[in-house]
Amino acid sequence: MKLFLKSLNYSPELTGIGKYNGEMCPELVKRGLDITAIVAPPYYPEWQVHKGFEAFSYKKQNIQGVSVLRCPLYVPKNVTTLKRIIHLASFAVTSALALTSRIFNKPDVIMLVQPTLFCAPFTLLYAKLTGAKAVMHIQDYEIDALFGLGMMGDGVAAKSVKAVERWLMRRFDAISTISYSMIENAKAKGVDAANIIHFPNWSDTEFVTPDTDGSSLKAEWGFSADDKVILYAGNIGNKQGLEIVLEAAKHFSLQPHIKFVLVGAGAYVDTLKANASKLQLSNVFFKPLQAWAKVPQMLALADVHLVVQRKGAADAVLPSKLTNILSAGGHAIVTAEAHTELGQIAAKYPNIYDCVEPENTDAFITGLNTLLSRDLTQPNSVARGFAVQFLNKNQIIDQFVSDLTALVRSKP
Image (spheres, rainbow, N blue to C red):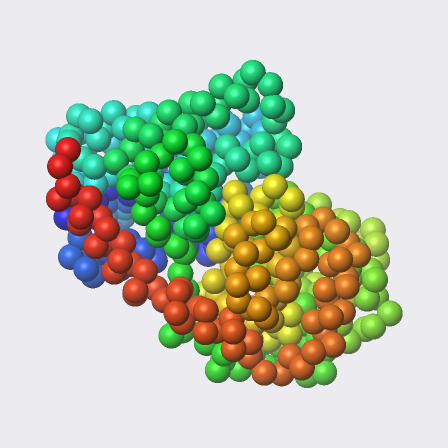
């Protein structure tokens, strides 16, 4: 089977969609698929093109058996709504040109990862011209996130954008997405249930385990064995609402053994650092994104993990960072409302993590106090058990290959 992947993000990005694409494609090659990845140069979450890559030129690579074509991309230094739209549109144009050059190289499947929806029209046209099956894989409902976070109003223009989104989604042969709530969202947008594939994000449960010792990294970062480390690791952007972590750190400032560590990069990191400095928080520490080889140690050194999101984002974006926290048997606080999938998982699997109301500082601090009062020296067996049963990388990718095979063999 020949598959074209079309996505903004790919390895060596260390977080989010790029990480998953970079893991998925070589695994598909191992299973006998011929994979071409049409992607952008790595830039996320720093919003800066990585060293060794160029923003405005095409570049071919072969990475672990995957034919990778990097397409030119506009990457704004300061991300605004307008600049983000130009950013997304730039990739839609350059990736369309890349596909045009491959018009006679017919794939069996062309798989578009959302974001970005801007790429959908030409992807559908390409599939029509070549006879390929078109699959949209939704990692992030970008339109829902945009409106859920209040970045746009709800007037005629907004309704028109949502209508276009629904129309485009219904034209794909299949929609795959990462959670059951996102599947229900696809149904609500008019996608036939028979055309929806559940393709969740995964964890390498054999690499990220509760057996890892994080004490050496903890010491390397300057913490004592008795310090309680509260860790947030991932993208530091506006949609996370990480101001609440600084407010909690201020509350715990008279307990010097409690340390708040934020590991990551993103468009909001400088603002967050400035705010921490203004508040004179000596118990808050910022660290850069860590290489994958160090991630198990980083997870192991934490006593409490944080998965923080604003209201309106919890069902538009299922946080990928949670999969590794669960695999590590971590004790976590997740900001999510009860009706969201994260809230429903917490209700169905008691003690898998603690849910608190998003953007509620008092609830967040109360949750931290509750969790810190428990014995955190032992791994969270509920979290680890869930990861082993539902988040195993090989099982998830094997099932996806089976679903793609059935799609290719189905009638036009």
